[in-house]
Image (cartoon, rainbow, N blue to C red; front, side, top):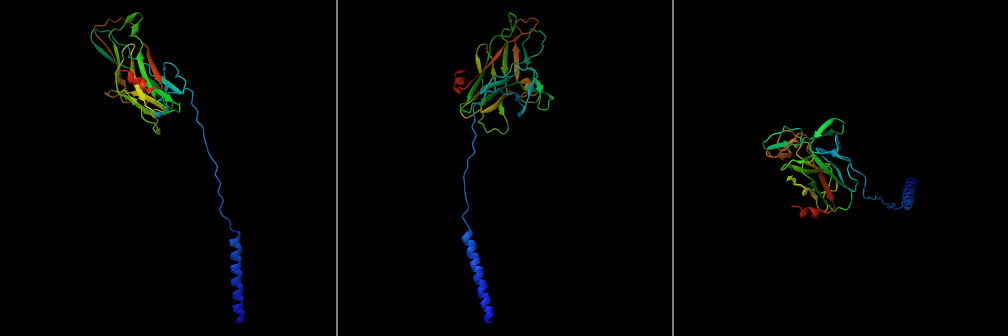
Length: 249
């Protein structure tokens, strides 16, 4: 009986001593901090056109007017307007600009609303102003299409779906006057970062809001028309001064 009690006492003492040794070997967890960083610089590379009906995807216009300007604040593309081939008449007429033709991200042919594309890669969040000026009358040599007017309607500013940039304000409609700037789109401070499209009309056809009805050329019947092509130049102007558009009426 005494031997049993003695053996139990020894076992308990051994267990307690073992636990004491383990406790003495335990140390506090270690902590250390490191850092991660990235530095952004302004981007001067040109930006390729995107699909105005889905700005997440690229788009290749068939007949770009010219390459886009260099960044960091750039005009990447502006549609050239084609009002087609029309018969000479002596009545007032309205003609519609054809859609912009090109290829989508899969290489398939796709026609989209006429549009202008701007990219702000400055990283300064100052905003920007875009306007357009018709430089002269529509002319065929020295013959002017007197009284003819080009009008834009259903203007909308859109960008990639995941963008967290502030929404610029697009003029929903305006009529060009020779030599006078018309407001297109204005991004105030903390708006318009990244790539933005201002498109005219949507992807439908035949409706009042569709791209094939959004830009018109009206020609008075009394204007003398001679056989041949009449054309003019549209100059798109982009600045990093949103207040500049406030002076344009």
